[in-house]
Length: 187
Image (tube, rainbow, N blue to C red):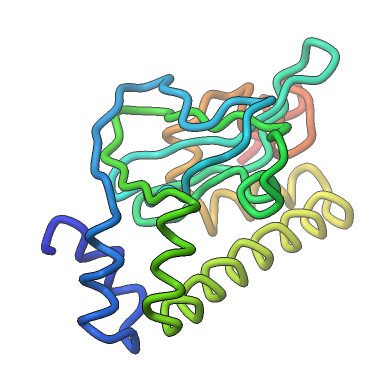
């Protein structure tokens, strides 16, 4: 159980029995940089917990790579729309470095909920956090200047600056690489 202690510690009110049942369904694996956890056009089968490492979610439109989110150590990630609706995903999720990841299948997660309804509370907390991050990013991109967006990223998610490429960061912040370069030169 110590291998995924950071995951279980996120839910201190969940019973040890429920945590153990959940843990039995988890599969741990290590992947190299550039490994695709999820692929566009396929139904998302797993909820992932990045114990160590990082990943990014992106999609391709008009031959442009558009980064929509970053996942860092001890965070959950999946193609949420696909995972919930069981429809093909529009996004890819790729590791940005060698990463240690845990995954649980959609079916095993549902089985865990049936066996231990208290796990649904933990899952709801994951979904709430996902929604908050999504909403903040929407507001972040619509109402802030390019400089403000970069400064907030530096303040609240500084690891992204060190792990992601300049192009990925620019795409995430909804600006060109040239604009990002000018901002970075002045900071």
